[in-house]
Amino acid sequence: MMEITQAQLYERLLAGKNLAGIDLTGLNLRFADLSQANLSYANLRGLDLYEVDFHGSNLTLANLSGARLCGAQLTKARLIGANVSDADLSGARLVGAVLIGANLTRANLSHAVLTGAILTGANLTFANLSDADLRNTNLTVANLSNAILNTTDFAGVTGLVAS
Image (cartoon, rainbow, N blue to C red; front, side, top):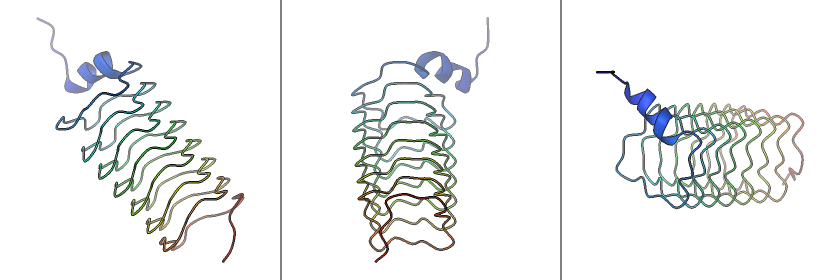
């Protein structure tokens, strides 16, 4: 009988799959490979998604509120209109991610890497962006009211209006 690890099982079952609208609440997805998956409209609310690979995934209008995404790989992921409020994305990689209109209210993005991300119209009210790398991001019409911006790198950012 062939033995399979949990990570190998996730890779075979979830990576690249169409999981649009799925409700994954209550599942343990730590370290799962959800790369290139279609998770649009999915419910991932409150899940432990520690170091999950969402590289290139479609999370448009997904509910990730309160999720733990520490160290998650979200490079080139699409989170258009996604609810990521109160989520912990500390140390996550969102290089080139598209977060147009995403709700990141009170999200913890400390030490996150968002280089080249598109955050047009995103709501970052009360978000923690301490030590985050926002180089070359697009923050046009983004709301950063009351955001924590200690040592955040804004080099090359477009659309940021000083107040």
